[in-house]
Image (cartoon, rainbow, N blue to C red):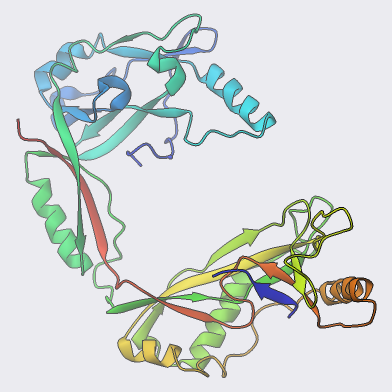
Length: 372
């Protein structure tokens, strides 16, 4: 293969959930009465106030009387139209924001679970920029009735232990929110070790857009072929569990993939000193984690561990070697088909790389009232 390896927005302000319809009070301005319609008499409700409301970290309102008193009064306005314009301008000028332009404002909680998070365009809700009309809010005494909370995270070696801890937290009156944990089904075997398998990078010829392969690439088929080959080479399937494959897609710069090789000082360049790379291809970088026993870890780390695995990846496009050979001959003045390679910032290009990871663990995150 003509390759060289270069080197080896959730509640905490994550992606917004599907928005709840809001009343539009003027052009582009939305009014959110976030307590409106909630059956507060049923009990179990609380309201998490985010930084945009408090200005000083997360706080929670769990006083039922305070929530009921604010229900017909509390609201804030948002300006999603201005947010969209700002985002589009940042794209046009190639300066995307480093963080989402909107942020969590309040989150409605019931029985220690998030029901809905309301968000607001940061620049608008902060009141630091001139908007017409300006941001409005009436928190109706909710900030004064709130208590500070802190995020707590705990790790467990077994998912059953995480479930048991979660059950206890459900009974704790000072715990106001438990983030849904990513736990496997009860009874799932927990293996003592975990490794990452980085599979050889795959080159695909791209169309004129530079971002789509000429021939469709079937990720599911690649994963199925790999699993078939792996279980053939390692038939003791009760000693490991293959986790879902992750497929990264890499694209070159405008100059193409850097070319290195014989008699090149650094990267291949043209007479003007500009990088002269190889374009027309994208790189697929597949990887997956495996939970397994220590014995299988040792087997995977053996020198010829994957010798019995059949080929599972598509071949390299033939034009890659052809064009590199042409570039080498033009640069060196004589034929040298194997002298030039392209450099890729991937884990491996010519074999499966095994990387030992931390043993599997299970994270539980929750928000607890801070002692006053």
